[in-house]
Structure formats: structure tokens, C-alpha cells
Image (cartoon, rainbow, N blue to C red; front, side, top):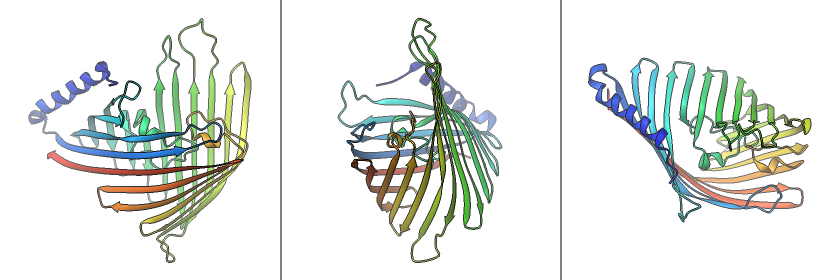
Length: 339
């Protein structure tokens, strides 16, 4: 089991202290639990992709302590186990420990915070969807502003602290949307910085990768017999630099996305045409000049707290047609323990 006592025990101590002093300070305490069960079978043969089956569960309990109005301290764990445990496939425990500020239009968080609920709908070109299995936390800062027409998110996720064997790595990203009637303008962006280790004897080069997306779209939901319809198109540009090896390389492209939903069924199609991109933390299929992804989905389970989603995915790239099948079930609930 991957278990860092230096991280986990201080979190446990903080939670115990707050519980022990709740009578003196009259905190409001709540418990939330998120359960994720997944099977994601990827039959890939195209270059740069890895055929793999993700099959396991993650349970994430967390306590929230309302110390003052708009201010909250949260602590808990992610416990992940992929099935077929062996020495190379161990249980993983990750801490949840962060400060959160919530107001009418603003959400801010600092610490080890769950990715779920914050970056659910970010494009796969920006962040690969495997992060929901391998890296359930954002480790850093998150800011979101939202009103009736405009929304903007900014975040930084620290991937690795510099050491003798480990490079300093982080991701900084943005995501936003401006709505006017049924039309909208949306943008997303990501910077991946892969710096050096502290070992001067190693021949290393600083790596910078980034991507920016801009889209104009329309939401035609509930106008016809379909429940949800949206279409957007725009441009993307990728940046790739390996310092002292090659200068900044740019990869412009065209993107288009279509979503159709009827009752418990949906179709998503994502198209990219442009130069091949080097995106170490994005979906590897964009490492080619043409790519189309088609998702055929069914949601057989849908309640206020529960969702089960079955999806067949087809990846079309030059010379290859790859396929993927997935079923994901997520159950979330919350309960107030002390008012």
C-alpha cells in the first residue's frame, strides 16, 4: 500500500483536534462520501497509445468543518484498489486536506482537494481522463468565479517536488465560458512545466508544453424531440519546447464537438485536424494530425446521488480504428453530523 505517514498522521491529528474542540467553538460538521467503481477496457494499437484495462474502485470519505461563515476546513482520504492485487498493483491511499472558501459567486480552495466536482468537464486534449483513476486530487490551488452568464476557473496542480531523483513538475490551467442567449464562447488552457532535479551531475533539459483552445458554440437543448443538443467549433494551438535542445514548436489545429442526448442515451463526437501535438498530460491520441473520437453512451442508473454510465468509444486516427468500452458508477452522499 502506498501510504505516507508524514502526510496522513498530521491530517488525522488535525481532524481529531477539531472534533475534540467542537463544543468550545460550535463548529458545523458534515460528512460526505464519494464512491467510484470503474471498468475501462482500452483496445489500442495506434502509436503513442497504451492498451490497458482500468478495473477497480475508489472510496473517498471526507469531513467538513464549518469554522466561520464562508470558511471551511476539510479532511479525509481517497482509498483506491484496482482488482487483481499484486506487487505491481497495490492499494493507494491519498490524503484529502484543504481549506475552502465559498461565497455567492466565488469558490476557492487550497490543499489536497478532490478533482471530482472541479474539473469534470475539461477537454481531454488539456487533461487526460485517466487522471480520475490515477490522480484523484488537485494538489495546489483552485479558484472559480461564476454568475448567470460568465464562468472562469484557474488552478495549479503540483505534480512533483524537486529532489535528487525527481524533477519539479506542475500543471497550471484555465477554463471559462461566456453565455449570450443560446450561444457561448469557451476557452481552456494548460501549461505543463517539467523542470530539473537537484542533481547537477545529470544531463537534463527543462521541458515546457502548453495548449490553448477557443470555441464558439450553441446550445439547442429542449428545442426539439432531443433532450440535449450542443455544437461548438474553434481553434487550438499547442506549444512544445525542450530548452537548449529545440526552441518553441507550435501546433495549430481545428476542433469541433457535437453532443446529442435523448432520455438515457447520448452521442458525443470530437474532431481534431491540425499538426500533431506533444501533450504529456493530455490524451495521447492528439499526438497525430487527424483524430476523431465517437462515444455512444447509455445511462441505465440515474438518481440524485447515483449515476451509472456505459459507453462504447471508437477512436479514428490515420491508419487505425481503435475501440474502448467502459462502465463507471458513482455514488455520492452527504450528511450533517453537527449543526
